[in-house]
Image (cartoon, rainbow, N blue to C red; front, side, top):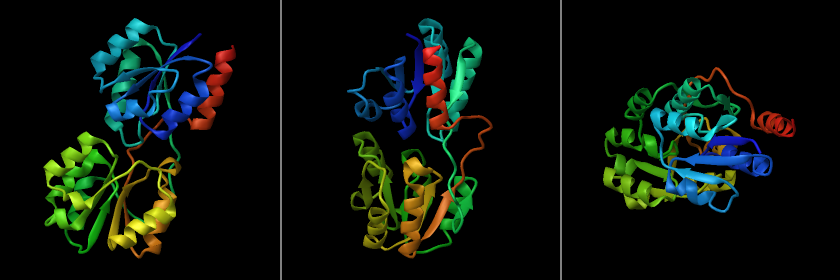
Length: 249
């Protein structure tokens, strides 16, 4: 049986596991124990912990994988860069699972976090932050952030602890596992009188359309941190079809 190394942590990663685990011997690399917990019952070998380039090169050199699938988040630019570099150094085939972009009409789009935060300082009212845990420290620079900002993060104990240590109010933490429906997003916006929803272009797997619709219906603005530019990649459906065909070859 052919062997694949999958860098996961997204909805696409889970879908790839379900679609390919019968056709390939799958090793799945996830960054956190929370990510490992989500797939602990899947018929795959799990590697938990962030790998640097040298660790990836060593792993690829030892295991003789037929290909590496990069199904990391669209905003995990450094992770994808590191995976590509390790594959290039070891001559292992690299496949990027690319998520379709969203409709950003009626949204205010920013190309970096500093400029977004600078503009937030000129506004008033409650802010719902849905950009994830990696970016939460940036928002602590906002005046009165602990009162203005509601932070939606994964229900991971380490992430919750980090948020509290940064000064976010416990009453303003929304620790939930998505995806989220339009009605739930709207209810959160209305419950906390949200004036601005800060998000990323997470696409359909992250229910971006539902989040956008909910915010607009609740009278809030939608501010989007633009994705890093990706020059390569293949859709989830096409990637599954391609790899299933190759498994039979």
